[in-house]
Length: 470
Image (tube, rainbow, N blue to C red; front, side):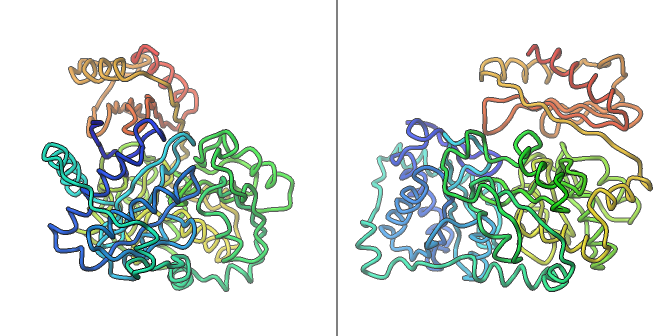
């Protein structure tokens, strides 16, 4: 049997190879056993799914296993954004949620995300327990308890819900949609054929949406809102018809943007602009959480505002834990996952897009100008990430070698500090840094670098490849 391992957010695998109905049934049964052990099964389970190949059928299989375990299910009546499913868990006071999605991964993948009863990503302690239950169930030949989907529907064990209705009400309570509408900012959106299709146009009439049709192949590229995937959105803004482009990943919990010049506006910039907006214009306070691969601009803003800063490994589940245990204003990661106080401890690409629009509406300024005003105060930064294919054997050899330490200079720059919290981060005297990190979900090596000098970023990334031997 395949060993089930949850990564940065959920269990993912290639469809028909690792992510099969058989393996899904094992994970679903373990999840139901977990809910029963924790006394949560009586509160019901929310199940949602994205627009990937077989996602609806995989979701129905989860429903069958839940129903077989006498757990009431609230199933989304159509594809839905992950944050809408997470909000439904909170709104319905359900025991947990399951979202069938592989997020930003290539189209050959699908996945299984657990959302705990607080409406956020399952904590590491929870996913470890589910993994252990899978192993124990397999060792004990635990039977999969199930009820045919049609029977579960007929008996009323399953209730179909539109998760977006209450979720949209929450968004309208958090952001001043009337102000945004009155501002008349022309917006283009790219949901990348994913579960966020139709959301921005429904919330704000007049938004021009591309890539909204059903396409499980995602147009031949991963549904990840990064610069190389948003050329069409950038061209729309550069045409002069739009002042902002908003992009969502495959399940709409991550955000990407294009500023008024048509340039890609990274998650680091988005984090910086929204943090300032929350603090200065909405008057919110609290700590801030960032992952090891996130921009140093957040450190400087926290120093400016006197806010406590926490750093975690990559994966929003770590941010979620801190949001549950502390008064956190905002948490975010390099991949575009950002969450805020007063909502749910969860990434929400749709809410982040609305907050960007609210900042623009309140100031009458574009994203580039808002960022430049902040950078003029704290310094200008350049950031790049390279993703390099690497096989698991080479990946493990690299990890073993880097763990031994001993790297004192990279690209002629002396290393003044190391941070091996998640991956291998090398920090230099002027604040520049290089992070070498194997992906937790894909056969990739990720190299990250940031500096106030673009040439230094290029040199560090080149040196990172040399260190890794790729």
